[in-house]
Image (cartoon, rainbow, N blue to C red; front, top):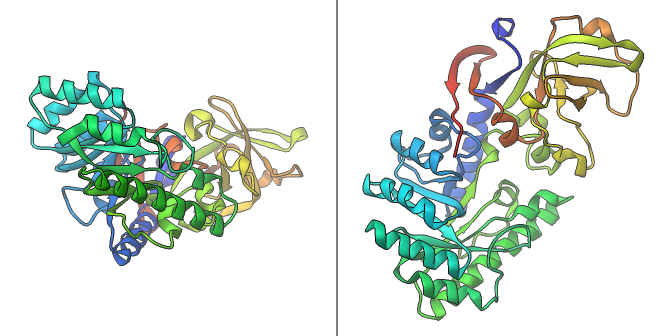
Length: 372
């Protein structure tokens, strides 16, 4: 595979797995009659985003204005900036609108709505806005039935385009049935809010939901116009723990080198610490805890029950899950291992490029970007 030519630690991307993941989600949502608006915060790369979409210009979801600018410069025109907007960011967003972007953003309060409307007036642009709905107490948003919803809608006036929510609680589920229940709660909450706005005489053309678990298992998208989902492109160990994917579907991994042994502790030391893997410990809350990542051989096949049990900045400590002896002969100094990540977004963010594998061989390198 020529992986011995790469400096470690580095990020690998299995293109065939990524392609299969993208096709599966496109097919599912097309069959449900809703539009896919991929979240590209995980990808941070144009080649990956193009794989996720059927159309060259969008629609996409972003979480930073840097992402919006990058993807606009690469031909994407239909962009939702899905983080609460503040007036100080409006001039930067307005510049994208003047350049031809169909950019929308979100708010969840009257203060934020009024600030956006006034800042847009000063910039002489109209920026469409979705009201963020809190469908599960997970994060930000207006709860269904809260009278503030209509206050926010009124403050937005002609800027109001619709409503959106994110079912973050789906990540805490312990069964597929539980994910389906969260998905229905997500759908019902945002559809009710849309209906309430329309009943009060407001416009609500967009009804947007999104998380990879609910996009995968939702029993219905009735009343929904679009689905935002992102980590499905790569998948990760948290998604595998939720039953959203199998370990064999995970498309990214970190290549590391064995740099030492602690035989009395049954540790193998690698150069892939938390600076390469991230400090995300998402599987600690699941039935199977993979530490900082699941250890695989150079072909990407998991090695027994070995995990990165602990991590320092530049050191990863491989041990057997639950303790036990390790065959150190399998891990000589300089040997390569691949580590599957807990959270694809967090791990990918540690790296500046993807080393792309096709048919088991290194094919090309794709740059990633960062910043806000």
